[in-house]
Length: 373
Ligand code: FAD
Image (tube, rainbow, N blue to C red; front, top):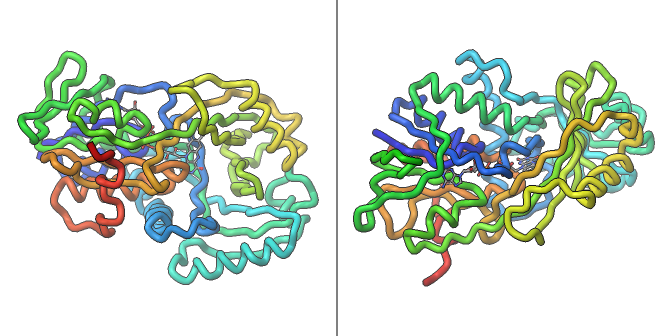
């Protein structure tokens, strides 16, 4: 089978890797848009504490987190040393002990069918501070040992490299779709015309542009996120857990004194505005320093900007494109794409190869993101 994957964010890279592993002939075409969500994202893999009640969404997030350890082991076996993933645990912090008990209860309930979330313990402020020293000393926490952090850029590159080792070809071009009647026959990528048995569109926030010439109005919106990288003078940051504060921000530590704080959630931006703004930085710094005052002495390294793609109802869609043959679409991973992307990519590969899926596709039908004519 010859399959083209359009987009090399976490979703396209995962799909391409899984296809190549199963012996398909794979061509990946990526336009490298500024603002690729995966390139900016440094993320948390900890879906179990989420208050969101949508079952179809939670299923993807839960399966996504569960999928990671075996994927990482596979990549390491293929020689990848930098996957960006580490199971460092998470601290969900709060000053209100009742809130912490409620969080602990939710985690314990969720553990019943997700044992991979690990041990759940309520920690005192001293115990919390010992695990993440820059934190304000008044925070206590619920500690969840199975949570992980991942650097989107590093994981994407590890997936793409491994896919290429398996024979996949990666082209950095803009893809447009080719069709014969209602059958997609391939893509034009730069000056090249490439035919294939199927095309899988993992185009994130830009997906409506590639589908529009088919007369398909694809309803993807996006949310801008600005995120900040710091250097913090402690040699042991590599083992520190992820910190999930009561507000909408988080703190992550990586190896070699690296820290990431963020991110903004901006819905009212005009177009693909990739600027790092003063207001964005102010929000990120104010919230982070309020939680972890000792970060005031850290070094500013860089700020990144990405566009989180959302489909209607904040629920991902994936599957065949209705009314067309030879094309599949996956999109709408929103704020949890690092968590879900590798799992959904595996499902997309199975779908394109005619293998049995591990999930009920009808909950995520692509028709849910297509505007009626
Ligand atoms: P993208 O990564 O945006 O990739 C789409 C790709 O398609 C781009 O490279 C683009 O150039 C390409 N493309 C589009 N059209 C074409 C075309 N016509 N031809 C060729 N190529 C094309 N998730 C978590 O789980 N946990 C987190 O903590 C977390 N934190 C985040 C923080 C920030 C600041 C941001 C921005 C996101 C965060 N996310 C997190 C969400 C996650 O990053 C996204 O959901 C995910 O990366 C989306 O992946 P994607 O592959 O669908 O899209």
